[in-house]
Image 1 (tube, rainbow, N blue to C red):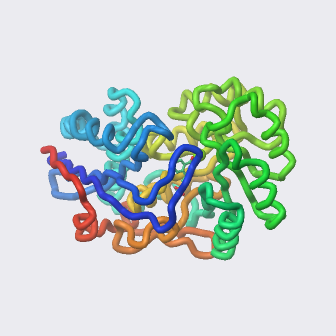
Image 2: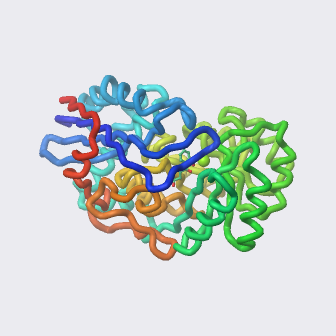
Length: 366
Ligand code: OSB
Ligand code: MG
């Protein structure tokens, strides 16, 4: 590598997104571009939330770690496969969102250099990804029902609802009543505890595909205890930061489905390992998202082409979040599917002029 550029890019959200912890109107993500000795450039995205509410990282912490530790490390490693770079980055503890941006950039560069699509390079077997959509907490149940109706009309194959204490069984029951057959699941982002077990016993009656991350990320025993009491599969998200976490969770019976996120795992390389373990253990997997801009979203689409992703992934079209995305063409969801590009590399081209116009901070490390 000869040069690495980090750009902090701000895009407005078309619809405010509210979770159990916070509300967002715009997002700042960090785009990572790495340039090799031949002048070829690979792009990745650090899609950390701005605050430390989903994971410990923030955009600012990612910026500092990327500039001061990851970029110098990556410049000093010679690698012939992205997994070699991932191994070298393993020297840096945690900071998975930051690492992920570099890992995706390496995979983009490598697959493009071989003339292969990113999905093919990763071992993907699918030509299109079934798309699910994630809906935040709305001011009213009616507003949520409107959102669900709009997404179902667009063809999304399953709907996930964010829940939080007070916005739980009642809301989910209303959505279920209006859409009796729709594949539906809920995501608590760890906002409950075992003392709320009655909420989950009631949710267990609503025919949900899964209940995502009911309890605090590190509390695998609480998830195992709940899974013993309910028949709806528990899906872990925040709990699974590496493959060892997944192995431990499965051994404990803490869940029966796994959401594999490129960002949370620290990149495509560890995400593939988690996929391989889930598949070997017969655990259904799907690819989660972090409201990625087009570059991170393209990586999610490519990952979702692996055979173990047997459930719809959170790979909405760009238009669900952004009026204009950072790629020259947006990622589109048609009839409930996102097509996997066959063109070499990431499959969507960064729109450099637009990216520059939205850049609020930039640094080059050489
Ligand atoms: O828990 O899956 C989550 C977004 C930010 C933080 C946490 C989560 C999410 C999503 C986004 O659900 C889904 C998407 O990117 O489409
Ligand atoms: Mg989640």
